[in-house]
Structures are given as C-alpha cells and as structure tokens.
Length: 418
Image (cartoon, rainbow, N blue to C red; front, side):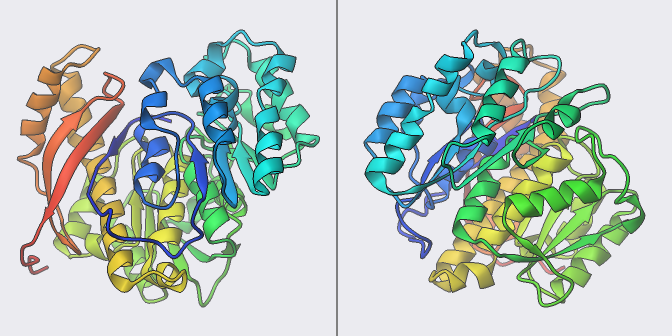
C-alpha cells in the first residue's frame, strides 16, 4: 500500500455483459481501492460516505448494504468493522463488538440470496496498535461465517514483520497485498477460471523474496492466482501475465512480445516499489507496445502491481471481455481507460511525487496541485486506442503525496509511427 493515481473518463453510455447488480464495498477511498467504482462493473456506496483519512462510518455502510440487492457482494471487512485500513490499526474496539458489526453480512445474504466474497487485512507492523484483536477477528471468521470466499492479505511485510508468521496461523487463504485485493476478488467473482500463463523477464529470480512480501516471488504469484480463482497454464492461455523484475528493459520488452504471440498481455512492473521502470516504459512507448497491453501496473508494492495487472487484464482484455457479452467497442474503451489510469500512476511515481515532495509541505493544497499539474503536462503521454492521453486536472484526495486523483481526456489524433 503506497502511492496511486485515479483518472476519470466519461463512458457512461457503455454497458457490460457481466452480471449486473454486483455490489462492492471498498477498503477506503484511495484510488486503487475506489477505482473499481468508476469501471461501470459494480454498484458502490455513495462516495460521500467515505471521508478520506477519517474513514467511513461502519453504521452508514451497513445501512446502505441492507438497502441493496444483488447476486454478489465483494466487501472489505476492515471498512465494515473499523471504517477503513487506517482505522483498523488504531480503533479500540472489543472483539465481540467487531464481530457483531459483521452480522450485517448474514442479514444481507438472508434477504438478498446473494453470495459474499470478502477480505480482511493482516495489519502492517508496527503501525497497528490492536493487531492481536484484528488477528483474533480473522481467526474467528475463518472458522465459519458462511461466506462464499474469505481471504486475509497482509500489508507491507518488511524484514522483521510478523505478518507472514501470523498469516500461517489463520484458517483461511492469505497472501501479500491489500489495496489491490478488491480488484482481484472482482475478477474472481466475474471471470473465475481465467487461464493465465506467467512469464518472468528473469526466471532465476522467482525464488527470491521480494520487498514488502516476505515470501518468494513464485509463491506470491501462486497465491494471487488462487485468490482470483485463475488457472496457471503453459499453453492456450486467456491472458499472459508478464512479471518484469528489472535489470534489462530490453528483456522486459522481449517478454511482452513473446506473450503477445500467445494472448493479451498484462504487465506487472515490480522492478521498483511505488514507481515504474522508466527505461522499460520508454521502450514500450517508442515501439508502440504500451497501447497494445491488456493492462499495466507499477503503482505499489510487488503484490499490489501483480494483483492490479492480473485483475484488469482478466476483465478488460478483448477476448475475455467479449466472451462476457460486451461489444468490441465497449471492451476497447474500458481497456483504454485502464491503460490511461495506469500510465498516470506511472507518471506520478516517476515524476509527480518526487517533484511535489521537493517543493511543498503536507498537507498539500490546491496551489500544489496546480503547479505539479503544469509540470506534468509537459511530460510525454501515450497515444491509446481511443486517442492521445491529455491531463486536464489533479487533486490530492488525502492531501498527501502518496495519492493523486486525475482528470483526463483522450483526444482523437493519428497515432505516431513506432
């Protein structure tokens, strides 16, 4: 969980063939958690219920949920119990009261007949004051809550973090990550059984422990595929997940090209934390490959990027999207939107965040947003399937440099020659 960007593009006239009425309760309103609410796939609580760093009222969320019907709910338990990820670390809430706040899920299932896919975060060390309470809650839930699926991703496991050992004590699936968990469970709900081929730019690194994960890279990927209910395959994939670990961007490009011969490619750039690999992105732009991707992610930790790339690639790549009953035009529009947001996330980590941190103190103001927007508007942007990406607005939803929320448009122009 680190820094992010969210862009907006008006595509309200497009509809999806995925099951309608799917409900989604985000962890909080930071961009990676809230962005599925802008995809047109799910029905979310009103944005106004979420009050930035102050979190969301669990009572307000429960009231909203009980008024909804739908076949499936994807929900953050931390939002329903504590009011968000930040609040889960500090809320002085007795275990039994925490459990009682989740009774709303049973009530919703009883009156809607829907299924619940949920996730609760193993808290980050040493930030969480009441981590034993949080773990006890997850342990009790793992023993039976009548949910269709429940998992516990762990948040930022640096060396010395007890998260991996704590995860091993829980009677439910666990893995690295947090902010991408909602996206991955949406993929599980909407497109289970996705056939995924995983390509690594450096196969020899798969047994190395990646930063913030606490387990080898191969194990992170295996657990992620299980979370999404995806199937690892070596041939005839629906999607190729390219894992770029850095070192040689040319090898990364070759991995993308190799993947494109098999199926649409989702690229997880995990060479660095919270920012993409600039030489790789420059190669992709120069060769006209960025706009060919099914998805790209570089905004967070390795687990964040792997999960976001897999989820968006599995939902928005043309073959899987069209098999769900969507038109080719709608699928291209949503894939383009995902790539636009991903590029802005890359641009923020590479240029925007360092620039604004060097010049403005937090909490960040509208003045800071105006100046950094002017700076970023001078940066090159890709030509995507629906036009040239242009930045038109920026704000700081939590008044800090980790997150930036964008407005953008796609201008109809001829694509540059690679």
